[in-house]
Length: 381
Image (cartoon, rainbow, N blue to C red; front, side):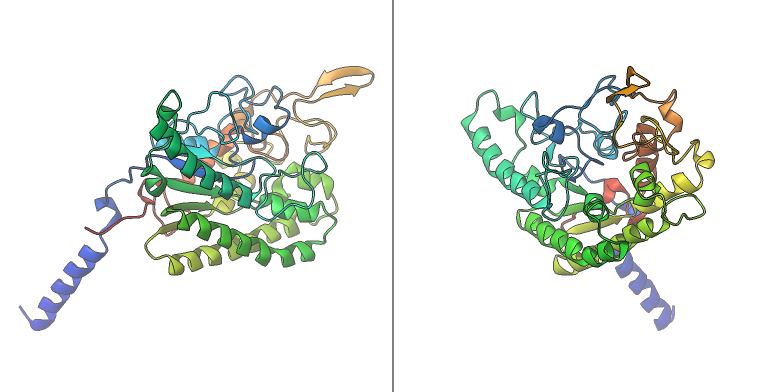
């Protein structure tokens, strides 16, 4: 054997040892999930603090409103199930909660940055990202005190080591863009606000890392310009070939570009952690651009709503009681939510959420391209 051949074999062996193929890696055993976000992943946080949702929310899976802004399960529910964990309890929910497999700090209408107007004086949640981080701080400290004290609540708390071994998931930012659009800012002004938004995200994620988190699964934001609440409120916006509001989607794409840069920065700053950037935008947009291919129809039309081109009206929201021609009616859902993408003009149906999860869980839309069940921090040894 030549010296060159020997060198190549040794080099390949070293590369394989240092960079094992994905198929050889053992699946992560995440014992818990800690989730941060807005209505895309809220499993009951906002309704624990404010008025609950009405039927037909939850009708497909839970057969009743279940704190989720959908007819059924959200992406985070499918994530939990795929990891053999139960659905996450909302941190704010004081009734029947169980934090043994983590907690969900997400609340609908949450933003990354401090909102200018909050419920009930405005449309945004007081539980923005920094508050969600502070809730994690509280849970980490107080849960261990409760475990030490024993009693009925001790078995409902996560074990101490779970905080380092858990998967930390993030889906937040859409409402920061919406706050700008509905706050009379121009598209250019909202674009200009993006660097501050993502830098705030960076600061808070660093704080979560400093608490012990090591495995991060970070969703970008979806195509906001394809949703009825944008299309109905900004009808003059230029449409793309699919019918989505082009400039609003371009802002979302700019946000996603900057968010990805932040994730790359986090990777450099904390090389011992695993940061996975998940391109949810591309998967969601494919639903709108090729609905029939994926088994969907009427891609821009809300399943639950009333009136207009997109079956969306902010004065006649899903589940609301309205008066039509002197008769009171409840704003209900379409006949078959399983073939619809948009649930209520703002959020997605369970069927769409399931589709998105199935695509992103493979790693095909992730950077690095690692499946969900391998996206953990790994120690050498």
